[in-house]
Length: 64
Image 1 (tube, one colour):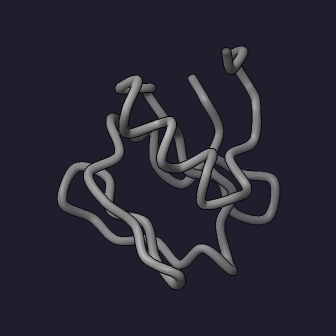
Image 2 (cartoon, rainbow, N blue to C red; image 1 turned 120 degrees about the horizontal axis):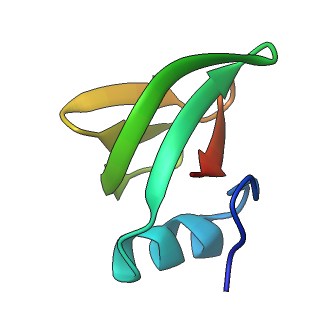
């Protein structure tokens, strides 16, 4: 399973985060942008967490 601080990089990682209801935080340029929550959905370009969308290319998603 994923440990706290693990980066979710691939679509499979994001799928698992939804399946296992992992609490995920959002980071950009080494700084936390959002303490996050549970992933709702994702596409090739964005990730939706608590109603907010974040660009996959610009952000890191880490298990809390």
